[in-house]
Length: 138
Image (cartoon, rainbow, N blue to C red; front, side):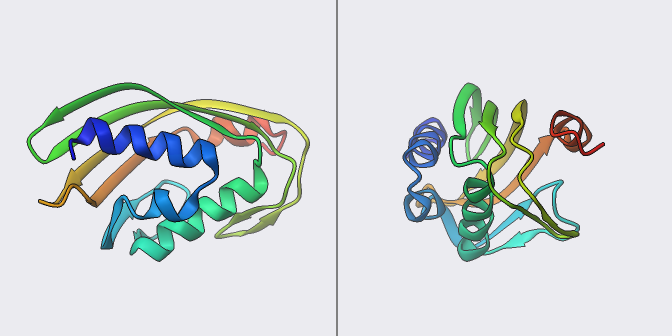
């Protein structure tokens, strides 16, 4: 499976709320660097938990791939994500109650793939301060 196909499946799984299918795109021992967390997410189960937590907070969230560049086993993807904060948002610092406010932002992910097409390492980039401001928390 190409990186473009993997990113496409990630968006489809996310938008179907199929956490298991989304997490299956990652290797069992994947490492994900996400600015939300002080330490990397480690493993497929951590990726699944992260998505479960996000979808609990933003049950109407929509994920759209904007651009993908790939070179061998590495790919860079740009995406947009939007939703309404209607559920509790679990963060490392604690849980944030629903604000009822919309959230919309662009981000990017740089992913490295193994020979089975699974993501083994990923670095995500997005504006957390901007997100908190949109939710009225900063």
